[in-house]
Image 1: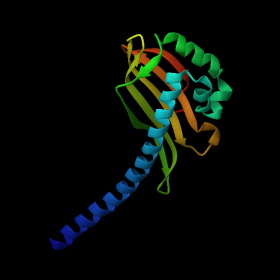
Image 2 (image 1 turned 90 degrees about the vertical axis):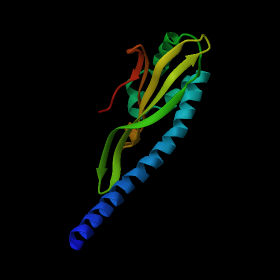
Image 3 (image 1 turned 30 degrees about the vertical axis):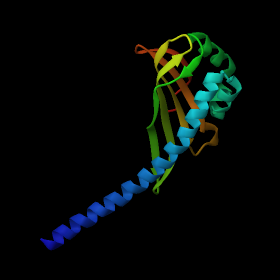
Image 4 (image 1 turned 45 degrees about the horizontal axis):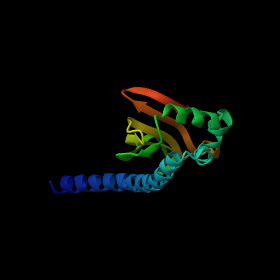
Length: 160
């Protein structure tokens, strides 16, 4: 009985140590992306197209005319973006090799996005690679503005 209990405790501790490392890595990435999310939203409020374009991955910048995409995006938005209720960061994709994250795609979703015209959109979200073995993939890859279960504007593409 004592050996069985000891084995169960050891397995539990081993499991916690493995998941603890994952949690620490996730927390670091989430904190870093939270800073980027605030910067992203400030660029949106200022309609700083150059700043927004710079946040995209090299691959997406080479594949799309992002200046034109952002001009179309701002034409779709009714008024100037002012605020959001809250945002959260979640994982979309993650690969781990030898205990290290080798590729990580995060989604940041702003909910309750409002404009100076009083219009409120359900969500504005972006996907971004924060870790990738190919440096050309690092950065934003997709932006979506959604209201009433309909995407009003999409910039970029999903990478997975």
